[in-house]
Amino acid sequence: MRSLDVARTTTLDLAREAGFDLAGIAPFGPPPDAARFERWLDEERHGSMGFLERGRGATVDPATQWPRGKSLLMVGLGHSRPAIELEGGGRIARYAAGRDYHNVVGKKLTKLRKRLILEGLCAPGSLFVDATPLLERSHATAAGLGFPSKAANLLHPRFGPWFFLGEIILETDFEPTPHQVPAGSCGTCTACIDACPTDAIVAPGEVDARRCISYATIEHRGLLEHALRERTGPWAFGCDICSEVCPWGSKAPDLAKRFGTRPEFMDESAADGEVLASMLTTANDGEEGHAVRYQGSPLKRPGRVGIARNAAIALGHAPSERGRAALLVALTDDPSPDVRAAAAWGLSRAHLDDVGIRQSLGEALAREPDAAAREDIESSLDRTS
Image (cartoon, rainbow, N blue to C red; front, side):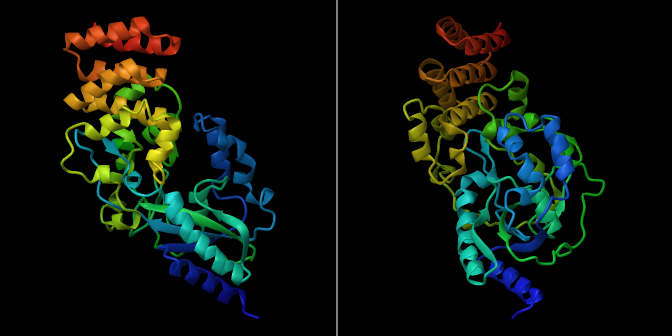
């Protein structure tokens, strides 16, 4: 019978053979940051992400949900690539330009799990990719995959903050691997804190999701506060600012081929504002059409209304003639009051001096049946008075 050390080495070797850049073993128990996570929830810094509160118990102590677990196999897959800047000035998070990481990482984990099951090391239903109550970055730190940053990311000497995490619950009590990565830290650097346009990094290692652009453009449903819209800039999905300014990620390799790139983010002949306008003018798609359009893409997550709302706000920061026309169409025809209100805001911000726009906003206000959207459009009109 093989020893635990041999079995652990086999497990880590199989993870690397499956295509993962990083692999390590963490204890299966409360993560190091459990108490910090609970304080974060108690302070309501998770915003409207109620699933985090609902999963509190399992997050704080995974054994309450998976009693057979003995160890955690943590894996990492690099995804660094050049910045994605849309024609006309809009931006999306780099990872969203290609295939959904849940699918890419999940397929690799599925193949790895089959091998581990054959070795008697794990059970069916034991793999996860950012969709279960596990405090991934904290467990990954305990497994030696990296060290925490002041932006609450995990950093690695080669990949910086640009890597995804996944995990498999093992039923063997392996010795952890906490010291794989050379010791590192942010030191006195505060680049991420200084660069965040919404001041979402409220203290080193602490992010208030309610101020975070990624949360606002991906997880939040409904209207955004006007003050936050002013500071989100041209981001139509996610935000990379804290990662882009991090010195640890400046030499990360270009791994775009791993995830591919959607055609609309490759077409250099696209007219100014065309991609954002296309995201906005989706009234006839409905949620089903949106799901089909972005099948296999992270852009599916916010839903049709969320993407259109984001595009309208981004067009307010990145004015173009194509964008102006799309905003007017959305203001008049979109079935969602949130999108109509966002379109009004985008027009008011990008086209202050246009008398015709002021008139269109007044007409939109007069016919708007939704009370919240009406109040929002009125606030946008105040900008032009």
